[in-house]
Length: 298
Image 1 (tube, one colour):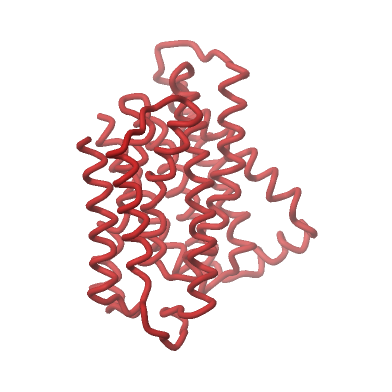
Image 2 (cartoon, helix red, strand yellow; image 1 turned 180 degrees about the vertical axis):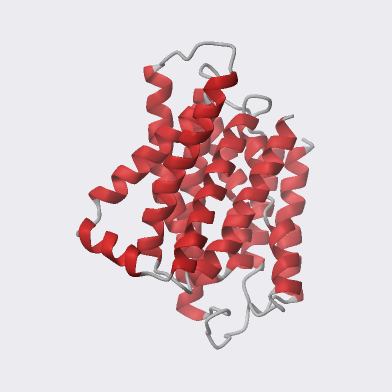
């Protein structure tokens, strides 16, 4: 059940990577992120309403666990996901998916330090393998930067933002997984995280009215695509947290972040390899996935 839920989460997050790349061409990330966070709240609230109709146990509020979900919402839903959009914009969906897939290595370290999940020499060695594979996906030669093929400073910037993204996701995953050990409220926890993220977005925005008017004037297709991103990310978060009830935090994250298995075929065949993926990119991705697979069977 844990692996099945984590795979469902992977499909949702992989879909978000693909949809958001198209959405960015029709509407700015700044406006789109408002839509994504609002849909996160609305969709997860609707799911919680349905859950309340069929659940057999009463809902009980836990302050400490709710606080960890809120912290996870800040570092993951707000900071991590916002930086993920920037990573996709700078690197493209295929390379961004490889960056996204390195999060389990960081989650292993954070879970080891904060909640005591074991991390030995084997896991450390495979963490190094995953990091090397991530680096290996980057081209050696100086390519001419374009919309779909970043190079030079743009590539380095995307790489650094990507690392900050996965660190935020790692902290968020551990916070939520730790809460699930004593408070099995994956859907309501997602609502808490989404509300905190939306509040942070409002607090850091200079002009709410201008943003709202900008959304109303935007391309309806762009709005619809960001709505799809909101549904996909909320679903992915709920599936991932639910998986943590059945398996270790790091292993649930591990399965969820195998998005290159979904993204690479789509980028190659549907998008006609417009990102310029090479044999080196494939070898680097293979190293990443090998490290993740070996972590899964440890």
